[in-house]
Every structure is written in structure tokens, then in C-alpha cells.
Image 1: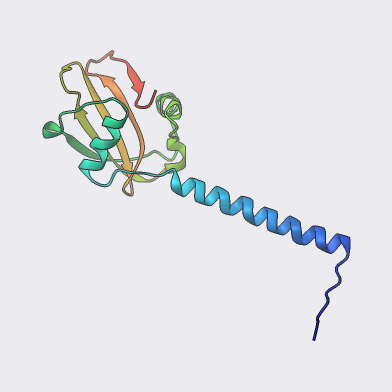
Image 2: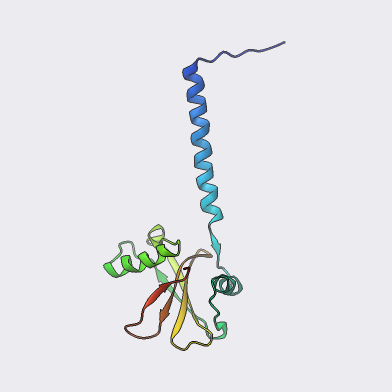
Length: 141
């Protein structure tokens, strides 16, 4: 027994359109998931920093809990501009609890690296000079 289905061009176009939309949405979801950088352990954070040419002294690392503000001030918008240069965007995490890990840079008493971790993933970071008027640079160049 053979079964034949006849579709109009319009119905076929709608079906193909729905399939294309589903593939695009699935592709965006999976590419966003694969872009997550695991930072749940100290070893993973150190590996991330090392992979970007930043050698740190993890024996003196510190951490503090923060909340990414719901509304960004001018200063926070400027800081997020630095994050975007590294491929991060803190605006996706407004209102979220996060942890900032601070690592002294090996052999350099004037700078330190910061990593921002939310739900076990690195969502931001910078390299900063340890002075009041010090500069802040993107973690990824």
C-alpha cells in the first residue's frame, strides 16, 4: 500500500520556513551554550588566565561576592565597554549574583587580574593597575 501526500506550494513553503526557523534558533542556542567558559574551580580560572598570557600567583588570590547592578551607571557602562572588547557583556547578567576573583600577576607588583564568575562560568574580567588612577585593560586582547 502506497500513501501519497499532495502539498500546495504555499504549504510546502510554510513547512520549509518553519524548519529553517527551528534550525536557526537551535543553532543560536547551541552556539551560546558552547561559548561558556568554565570558571567553577581555581584550576580552571588559572588555566583561562594562562591561556591569555597572564601568569598569576594563585597563593594570594582573593574573592568577593557582588551583584551585577540592574541599572548600569556611567562607570559601569564604561567598564562593560572594556568587557565587550574581550567578548563578554555584563548586561546579560543584570541583577545576578557573581564572584570576583582577584589574582596578583606574577612578577608584577603593580597589576592584578580580576575574573567575574557567575553560576560557575567566567562572564568578565580585566587586568588593572593597583593605583587609584590606574588603568584597566581587557583580559583578552
